[in-house]
Amino acid sequence: MRGQTLRVELTSGALPRERLEPTLLEIASALEAAHRQGIVHRDLKPENILRASDGHIKVVDFGLARTTTASTDAETTLTRAGSRLGTPGYMAPEQLRGEPLDARADIFAFGVMAYELATGTHPFGGSDPAALIERILSDTPPLSDPLNLPALDAIVRRCLQKLPANRYADGAELHEALRGSRLSDPIAPSPSPRRLWWWQFHQIAVSVLCATVLAPLWLSRGWTAGWGSAVFLCALAATTITIALRLHLWFASNVDPDAFPRQRTRVLPWVIALEALLAVVLTTVAIASAGHHDPIAAWLVVTALVLVVSIVVIEPATTSAALGPR
Image (cartoon, rainbow, N blue to C red; front, top):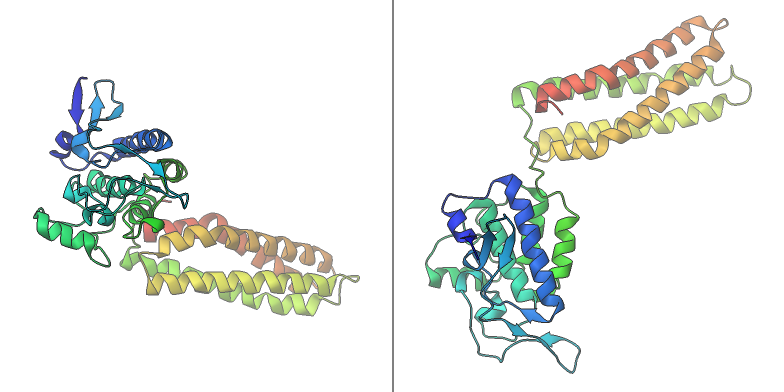
């Protein structure tokens, strides 16, 4: 079969991001097929993964592979205790200790290889076999560095768990996890410290604005026929939640700037929805108050317009200044 191994590709460094995800998916698919047949490879490593001339991945060299056999307690095992076949840098802790194996040994090897393909380096660092084995067998095997792809980092860390029970059960479960994750999404960039202050000021200003609008709503609750109190309570709930969320984002941007972009992505849709609802409530009350209480109506209309401008213009502009275009 024509092609080259992934070890050859690694001589040029980590795989390009656009090639990494399909490569890992094809390897996991091959493991799923093997494990479904009760076959454990036992020597999964870049030297045994071939990229054919058509670009597709082939898992080769099943020389150490064995079929699993069901034991009396319904668990599957492989080889006798004391057998240590494989390549040390890719062997699971139980494989290094010569204990019985199952498909989860391949899952560990996949985690090692996935990290290596993503970074160009071994996850446990170094090349000295003795030191490498010692790190793998330690109570908490240290990874060299986290991956800058959060979804893949989480999958790799589960694959590399010391206890087999904490890993994916087999290739099918691993393949499903990979397909359900956006592996190529990088960690969002940290905010610019020099520009973040303007975004933080905006959060405080909008929070204060939302708090002050409760006063005219309280005054106007008796001017509407029967629904003024209900509207006030609805606005109070929306205002309390949006202020709490904005202050949470402000706090996160100060305490943990690296995690702040992800926090913002998760929280901001709720803030926008609540403030849009509040703008509708303010406009409705303003219309009901017009003609009899024009100053209050004007206050409510202006606040509603400021909230709309904040959502549509100011929030995206301050975010772009702090984090770059979103």
